Length: 205
Image 1 (cartoon, rainbow, N blue to C red):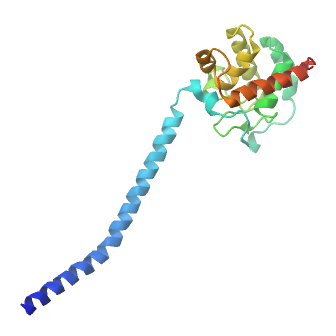
Image 2 (spheres, helix red, strand yellow):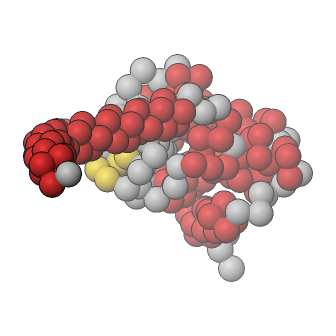
Image 3 (cartoon, one colour):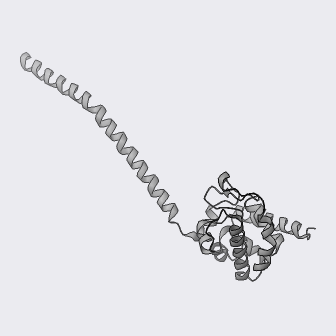
């Protein structure tokens, strides 16, 4: 009986020794598998973000510029284009300047954390819709943004509050709520742009 137990002990000891050699490899495989799963989740999330409907883009992108791309920053010259472009699309120059200040602070290379670009913070889909090939070109960006303001003003029959709310949150949101959406960011945006517009136009009390 003792001989049999001794043999069993040796076999069990050998099995444990083999398992100790194999287990680290298995653990490493598990870690690699988990890492692969995490990468897959990230890729799916990024793909989902890229494929979201563009109607929600302005809501997902803060109006305050996040970073500035130095290589894209173009200095000087663009301000001279505001007046003629504003006249071309029937938008008040004072309003355009207020929107620029609120959107980018006048930084031609501004990029929001979610990807809105340039002086008037055009989203990629909006830029394409407006025929803007390079959102970081200040003149193209200005024309696209001013044209968009004009389109929104026409849509809302000159209602400045709805026009600004739609520029920030998207016309779909404004239509859904019948006016300024109940978003703190949008409400603050409209209030601040209106205040700057009145100062620019000399109508501030």
